[in-house]
Amino acid sequence: MSETNQNQTQQAQPKRKRILSGIQPTGTPTLGNYVGAVRNWALLQKDYDCLYMVADLHSLTVREEPAALRRRTRELSALLLAAGIDPVNSVLFVQSHVPSHTQLAWVLACNTQYGQLTRMTQFKDKSAKHPDNVNGGLFTYPVLMAADILIYNADLVPVGEDQTQHLEITRDIAQRFNNLYGPTFTLPDGYVPKAGARIMSLAEPTKKMSKSDPNVNSFVLMTDDRDTIVRKFKRAVTDSEGSVRYDAANKPGVSNLMAIYSTFTGKSMEEIEAEFAGKGYGDFKLAVAETVADALTPIRTEYSRILADKAYVDGVLKDGAARAARLADRMVAKVYRKIGLLQPER
Ligand code: TRP
Image (cartoon, rainbow, N blue to C red; front, side, top):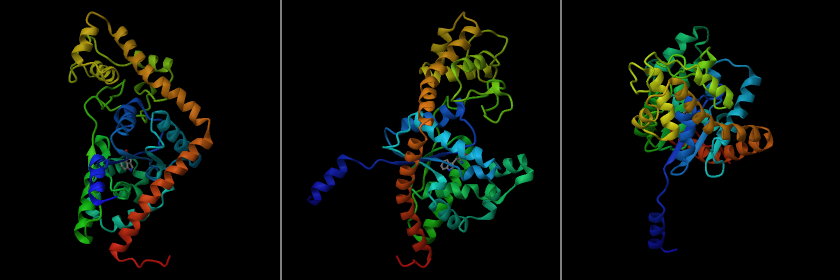
């Protein structure tokens, strides 16, 4: 092919931007995780080259039963597949299956200042919450996350608000490394999903929906069946006004339900207010519950089917790890060379 031809081909097919994101296998994702992360992961596949990772190494910062960790890692992988992650066009893998993440993390740790790590709010929050286990991994957690991202030269990183500080430190680490050793890493941008993404607790609607909440009625799990979903929404905290009206400050419960309904129906708040004008909360809650159940039921069915086929899930993860490792190993080799580690004979 002549050079002009090659250029034309490249112009016709601009290189797609790369996305990397991760989710910890710490329990079944909630409706909040679905709307805030998983659903977007599936949608983003249309426009980006995507790598999606089950961050099992990050979850080691909190002690967990080995058998549960192993089971949850496979379950979460199956759930991601059920939710539409395409293992052919995207790369789905488990973090610990690609050892170069931890290799790069060590190099980056040596290029990250203690003072900066002590300023991470998540480190401060988590150490306050678990004073009996303030381990080194909890402290260097953002460095491993930086390695996850930088090792693939990811352009965009979809994250929740709680991870934006970790993304900033990732950019700092990359920038400092590039200044010292020459251009090596792409500086990633965060991709924080649009409004409506922050789903609040059904029991205390001023708090974020969380699967670690002791009140099981405060959250809907991605794998809850229709009856459970309806029951949980029926119990959702509202207010005594009795009208479906959006007012996040004074009517957080109703506003949260409206936000959920809006997310799944695409209807605006005005349209929802009109739809339920003159109707009670009972009707409204049922409509929200049915809409959520309609969205989650196919995922749940698909999840059971996929999870029953362990060989399939493990095969997908093996293929994902191999494809991820090809990219990641190349980056580690480049970094090792740049910082002056003697290259072994091959
Ligand atoms: N720390 C992230 C979380 O708890 C998970 C994660 C690990 C991640 N590595 C990542 C997210 C890299 C984005 C990119 O939500």
